[in-house]
Length: 108
Image 1 (cartoon, rainbow, N blue to C red):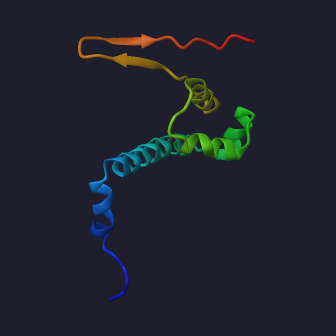
Image 2 (cartoon, rainbow, N blue to C red):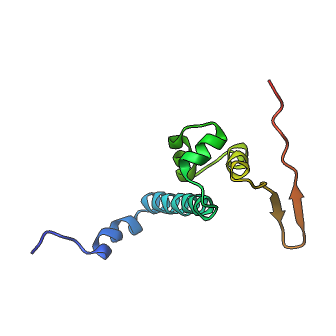
Image 3 (cartoon, rainbow, N blue to C red):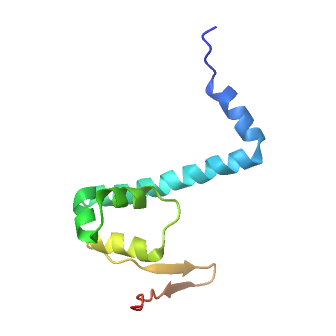
C-alpha cells in the first residue's frame, strides 16, 4: 500500500457534503473567470506589467483582478479599457435584449 488515495476516494467526501461541494464549485467558477481575463489579456499580447502601467496600479493588482471571483464593473471596465477596448453590458431575456448604460462614477 502506497498511502495514496485515488481521485474518486478524495472526491467522495466533498460530493457528500453540500457546503464543501458549493465551495469547490465557487472556486472552479472563479478559476474559469480568472482564466478568461488572463486569456483576454494574453490574446491582446499584453503583459500584466504593461497592463498595470496602463491602469496605474501594480502588477500584483492586475493578478488579483484576474483571479478575483467577484469584480466591480468599474474595475472590469478599467481593465478592458486599459487593453484598448470598451466594456458593454447587456441584459438578455427570452423575449428581448436590453443594452445597459454604465454610468461614470461621479467625482467625490
